[in-house]
Length: 84
Image (cartoon, helix red, strand yellow):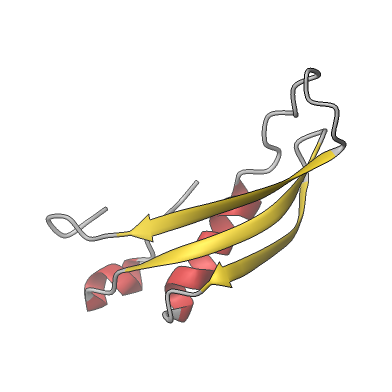
């Protein structure tokens, strides 16, 4: 659900955002936070929005006994030929 903010595209802004969140067994998330900022607010906000827009995620498989998982991801916002 990652979307490159149009304003960032128009300004030629790029960056990487490190995000961490808790994924519950039922696919719900909480405690979404930026762990490593791109130093560009538009991109940091877009990364957090991508996680929230992905809810609900697929449920945690029964073969995993934990009730929740801590997920850490890095979202790259790179311009290639004008749009990414």
